Image (cartoon, rainbow, N blue to C red; front, side):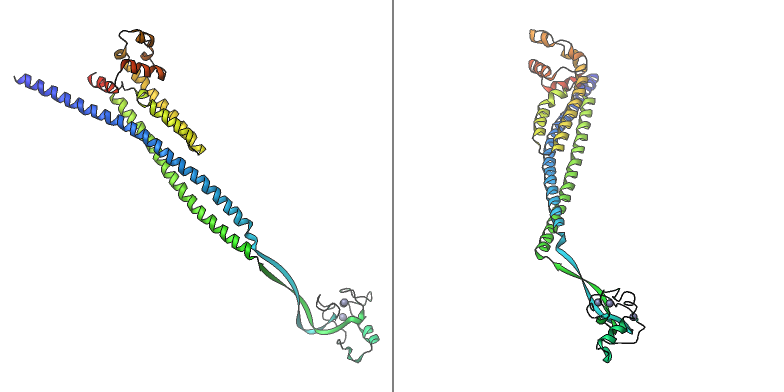
Length: 328
Ligand SMILES: [Zn+2]
Ligand SMILES: [Zn+2]
Ligand SMILES: [Zn+2]
């Protein structure tokens, strides 16, 4: 009686372990489905964000270019004015060109003769200045071109001073300020959207990693599990989704992801198919004879349509793969 009890205990424990393992495998399978669903959702989010990033970048670039085109709202104009500067000595100046140039002869050594001519006759006045350094060579002033009569002495000289005058174009200034602010706001929004997109990209990377972990885990527990049959419909939907993405890079990446996933699932299922071959060997029937061409005995796996139709013909629930793993 005691031996029967132990046997009963052993059988019960075995059944408990098997049930727990089945549950674990189902959880992994559900996890794979959930991760694939999440992948689609997150990729759509990324598409929306990347489209927004593109719109914001365009807005930012446009506003920045516009702000630059209005940047010249402050016009600088230089004006020259002649200012009188007192000097300790006397200089020869020309009354015709008094405020248009410097002295014709600075620090003249001739006797001082003012503009009012000090009682000199015009002839004496002219004769006096013909001896000045600026006139004595050609009787015409080398500095200003005038004759001696227009020249006189003074203890001042005129110096050119350049002044900058800024004229402000109010309309351009307000456009410049408006566009600069618009570019700043768009720039902040662009940075935010780029950061959001980076977060979503990390979520996709984590999702793909988790997906692979679950697949590897499930494969190690159940070598007969056929991943291709399980996920093909989902991959097909993901492929269709990928074509609808607005952002070109998101579209390309989504397609590449589906391709990689399909390769992964096909590779895993090839091993499953190889491992499952003896159990799945077709017993009888014309349909089986057509499909029972030994392709399941070795990788590469059969084309998908064949796998699916085989699945339908045998009406094998996916759970059967798990059960076979438990009992084998
Ligand atoms: Zn002189
Ligand atoms: Zn002169
Ligand atoms: Zn002159």
